[in-house]
Length: 359
Image (cartoon, rainbow, N blue to C red; front, side, top):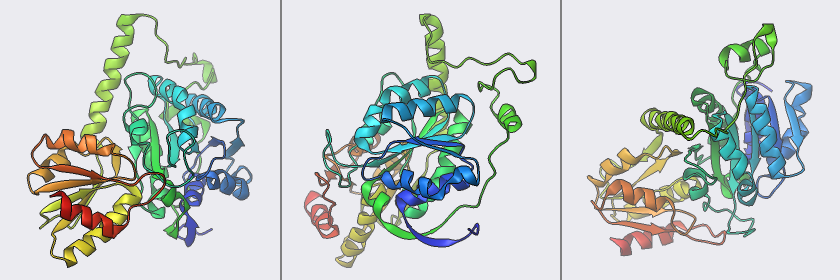
C-alpha cells in the first residue's frame, strides 16, 4: 500500500493497520466484542511475513497482558487490545508494568457494564483508565480518539509517549468509534528498530549479555520501604512532568460561548451536532474536547469556567469525567452531567434540551 493511501475502514481496523506501519514488534491479544477486528485484521494482513511483527492470540486477557509485559522488558514496541471486561482482567499486569516503568500500548474499545454488561458502546471505563484501575499510585497516559483517523494517528503517538516517559499508554475508544467506518489516511511505514537501535534507545531493557554487558533486571518489587518510597517519588515526579508537557485538547466554537460542553470520543461528535442545533436556536455554546484524558486538561477547564455561565459534561456513562471537571472548576460555575446508559448513545436534540433546562 502507498504511504498516503486514503481508504475506508473501521476504527478497529485502523488500529491494526497503524500498528503494522508504525513499526510495532508484537501484538498479543484475545478477541472480545466490540474490538475483535483488531486481531482479525492483523491475522488477515500477516505482518510477520512483511515486517516481522509477531501476532499471537493468547489463551486469555491475563496471558496477553503478561506477554506484553515480557516483550516490553526487552525494549520492543508491543501492544494489546481488548474491551472493558477484558481490560479488567489485565489490571494486575498493567499495574506491574507501571511499577516497572515499561512502555507499551493498551487499546480499550469500551462496552457497557458493569460486569459483562452489553456489547454496545459506552464510556464507562473512564475511572478505570484515568484513576488507575489496578493497585498502587500510578497513571496511564490515556488518549481518547474521536474519529477513525485519530484511531490510526494515536497508535504512533501512544508509542512515542510511552517510550518517552517509560510508562504504559492507553487508547481509550468506545465501541462506536471502533465499529464505525470512515475515510482514513494511514500513516507512513516506519522500519522496525534493529537490536542495536533498541540497546541504544532503551539502555534499561533486558537485552541479555550482548557485548559482555551485564543484563538489566526489571521488576516492580522492592521489599525495603525506604527504597520503595524513593521509587514512588521518582514515578510521581515523572507524572508531574507529563502533566506539564503532554496535555492535549480541542476547542470548538468557544470564542463567544456563554455555555460549554466538555466531552470526549463519540460523545464529542454528538456535542458538535448539538452545538449546531443550539446555536440555530440562539444558544451560544461551544465544546472543549479532552484528547488526553490523563493528563486531564485541568487548567484549560478552569480557564473555561471564567468565560462561561455553565458547563455540561456529556458522557456515555453515569458521570465519571464530570468529577474531574468539578475539581477543575472549584465551584466557579454550575457543572451538570448528562449521559445515557446501557449502550444507548445520546441524541443531539436531547442534549440541547438538557442544556436549556440545566442553566
